Amino acid sequence: MTRPIAYITNPLVRHSAERDPEAIANAVANPWTAMVVLAGDLPILQTGEPGTSLLPATILGRLPDHQEQIFLGTLNDRPVVATLAAPEAAELFQDDPVLTAVDLRSIAVRGLVPEEELGMLAMAKSLLDWHRRHRFCANCGTPTQAAQAGFRRDCANCSAQHFPRTDPVVIMLVTRGDRCLMGRQPRFPEKMYSCLAGFLEPGETIEDAVRRETFEEAGIRVGAVRYRASQPWPFPSNVMIGCIGEALTDDIAFDGEELEDARWFTKDDVRRMLEGSHEEFLAPAPIAIANHLIREWVKE
Ligand SMILES: [Zn+2]
View 1 (cartoon, rainbow, N blue to C red):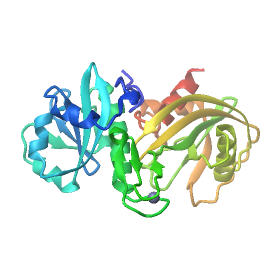
View 2: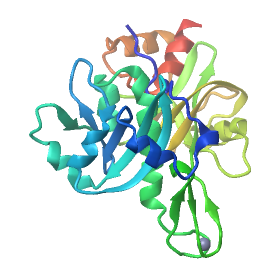
View 3: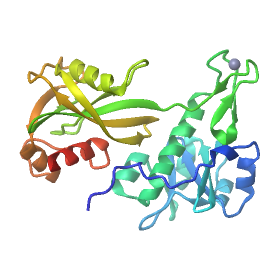
View 4: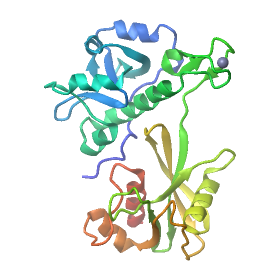
């Protein structure tokens, strides 16, 4: 069975209109509330088959202190609060028979929690990470305070309001008839090739970002661009915008800095890469939207 793209399933009801000053305190006081805890950027899980990231609120008593809390919303009417603990708190669970600290990528790859919890964990990780790295006002430098149940930070000095950011990345499978273009970065696992990708820049459409990045990285001109799917990517807070682009040219050129190789692959190559039976090349991991884009394309 093919697992869905990681982090895209999030059945949480966000209740964004109810992010009042009491929302976190009320939820924490409710014994039914589920607590999602991150020690630094490591979620704490209750182990099992599968495990869960929804912990009883009593977990707070085991943390030496915590730094930020967010009212995430409700899951099947159960309030969910995310809590940020210091990175060292992960050590508290080293020898615990029931609880463990695991990075969010491994949680997705190894299927350690139900699919439905992955989107919520991505949300919690991106938000808590934003709090951790945005403690001061970008306008005047004064320390800021969390507001809106954790979805905003306010500056008491200049009244600026700061909102959590999501940075868009275009990721595209560029095709030319029966072939598609993929490249490999030096940091990729051995033999792995994947879709090209890059940050969307200010003042740029998604379509133009696909065309610009493809030309910059591989020297290929792209015409029509179709949006296919998106994926939250909480490392730390991106949204991957998956597109198919039609190549207008054939000759690949790359500078060797960003990509160490780029080439055209046939549908037969890609099928065998997805199966893991290709002798030379590997497909991107199933948790990634790149895998989904190429899997859909070979079916066309
Ligand atoms: Zn300020």
